[in-house]
Image 1: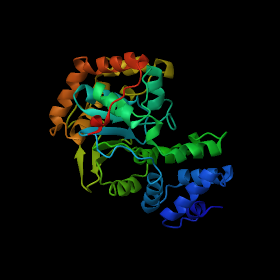
Image 2: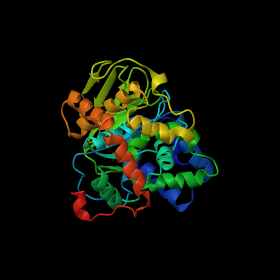
Image 3: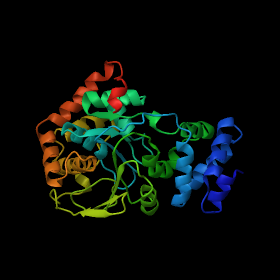
Length: 349
């Protein structure tokens, strides 16, 4: 059995970068069989290792990535959550549209459902919204709409190799690990990232990992209700990668009325697109509107688009009630038949 797997099973701390390099090398040349791939994923899913092991794992994957644009996309924020926690509609995806309609440059990453009935990728597919397939396409889409949904190309190719190696076994049983580490796996030249962390995710390890991120502003948001999004009816804490934190208390920026029954998912996946669009135009209920606007405000402030939270919430509410958020979603949907957006190098500056 490979030393990386033994280190995880025996809780040797930490599993170093050279060990991870060896694991990916053997995975790539086919000398690791299905049993070892499953053992690795099962160990990671059962107990997330210490942050040093995770940092070495991430670094060993990062060094294998193909080159991406060196220049960052200015004022652009990535929003992605860990999943888990109470079931809600796709709040982060809705907040991405609302923030973009209010003038924030947003790139959304995500995945298919691991712990929920409908992940962000599943929802976008049902809406008829295409994921981008390269940095060039992402930059072009971002220029055209102010929002883009990045496809699997932002994630390490080794994860795809892992999935093929464990097949026909599904990756879904390993969703806890994939959800928790996913926000740190996407490689995007953004200047900010907002990641909701649910109660089922290992906050201490993720905070330690966030502290090692120096190339962008990174916020981890948590609350006392266990959800991976900001809630008006909860006390929310924002942990910043600079080491400090602040609290957005229940009722501080939006009303504290309501609860999870008001922001639950659509009754069935088939009705999810219509329900999602009703969230964007403010007809899904006041609690849903407030929840989305609070999260959109976080994107505005984290990205530096606005500095005042109250103004950010007001701008988000105007984007919903004035129809801009739904109109943006409809424009992106209507454009699905066009060739993917492309741009030259200047868009990356």
